[in-house]
Length: 257
Image (tube, rainbow, N blue to C red; front, top):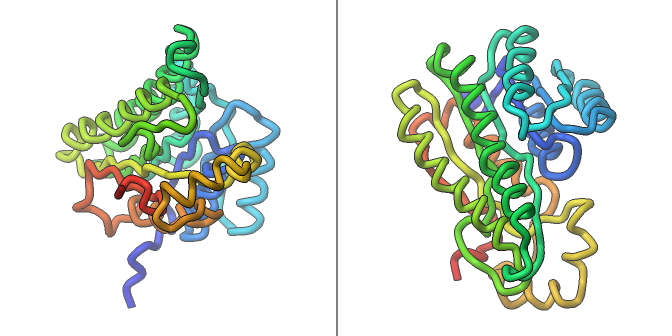
């Protein structure tokens, strides 16, 4: 029997791995045997995440405090991973933010911050991991967490900088896939729809958003914990070697309409 999605011995770096979807995806990879490197700004949270994953899934973990807007810190974090594990097989670019306001009221600072974190931050991590680990090894899996809002606009909550940044992530994914394919590195993105996290739960449960879900989402509900796991595992797997440059919506059908 072939274990298509076995990741035993592989090293996965997950950014934004302090709460929410980042932690869920890290656990999914650990469940398949991957060693987990949790990157985020809040040290006490990533320390706790790394400890929980190590104890639950019996894999090696490493927590590294890192601000992905700081190029020197990103490079140092990748060096730290290589010093400990000697390899980086998987990168999940999950760290991000989201400014919500009418477009006409968005400030320059809000727009710049969004691009610097969501788009440039993802590029910084991918660049460092590719240059220092994946290109020399002639192997890698880069998974950028974009958004269904990187594929479409919306009327429900003004967030032009987020749309712009995530749209950039979508096409950056294609660009990196095109450049790095010759090194046996695949680059794909996942475009999540509305998912419950600690930060989104109250908003998504509001009467206004609930009504919108019934109208705009064919499955008429939000994503639940664990429903990104299989997409993550698939794209991280050696078995997905001929899948690259793909932007995969996991959105209950939102972008189908």
